[in-house]
Image 1: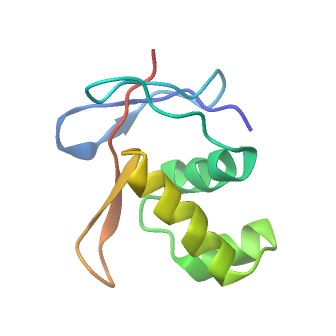
Image 2 (image 1 turned 120 degrees about the vertical axis):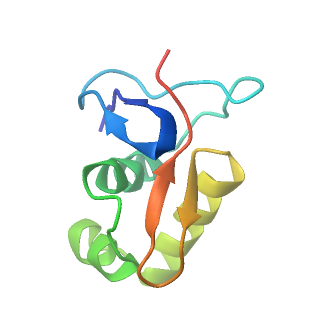
Length: 95
């Protein structure tokens, strides 16, 4: 899945799906795997999506979802705002 997006102040997402993931947060972001792009695409389309919803949509184990989300957080792509009823913030902008 290819994704193009931009983030405005406050974590609001505007833009469109299509294109290549990329961006900068004080430097280049590591390349994302295809599955990380899939997870990110779901988060972009619904920033309140749960692990279980991602599991159902991608047909992968919940521990795999946790690993992909951890990788996206470690790469500075996403951040969690709030707890159980929180939302995902997208931290990168497209090139």
